[in-house]
Figure 1 (cartoon, helix red, strand yellow):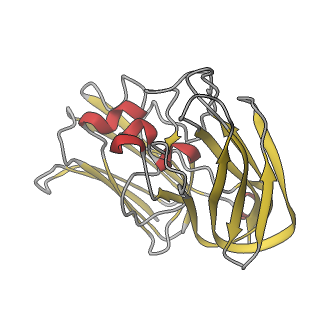
Figure 2: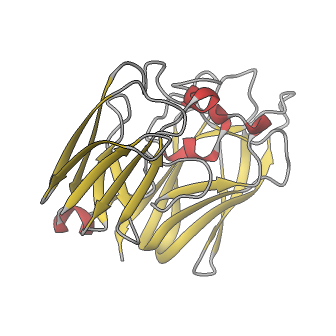
Length: 260
């Protein structure tokens, strides 16, 4: 059973939808700061779409519950300008099939990821986000969007490091997955941007892999040198090019594999 509920900032139930395998919710309300969506499911693997303007994507619910506070104010800059606007909204959630869960795919992608603590995964965090702004937040690198030839607001949201040389980005899958490759899409608003020439990815199984990068906004595929069973991965020790710009940034981080 899947239940989607919308609550006001005061905790009042606004709307509710329930179904055995696919719940479809309509919310007739102008969203207010603090409004939230809750998804409760007997199945831990779901495909959800939290707004008509957000890509549908996979989430994993360790406790069978997903709490999603509707982005408001500055937080909306990382989303389509019409996202969460108007007086009618839709939210959908369906159970993934066993075939989908076992298939090889981008296990990092979660367009619904939020900044801060979450009870659903995958989830991205970092030790720095440029000026604390949402359009440079770590969650942007797993939102499924790879537009890379500009910087700033949607659709060019990225992970910005504020010129920190010790920046790292952590991807938590919320459970063990088996992975063998990844792809990085660098932000390529040259000459505003610089780029990283190399970096390291640390895996929770104890392995570390060094990689090289080129000056391009295209996806750069990186082998993980075999299959690894991991709970999390971390990008770190990234070395900037000698470009005059101090602003390398990451648009998207894809990781390829399946559930363990």
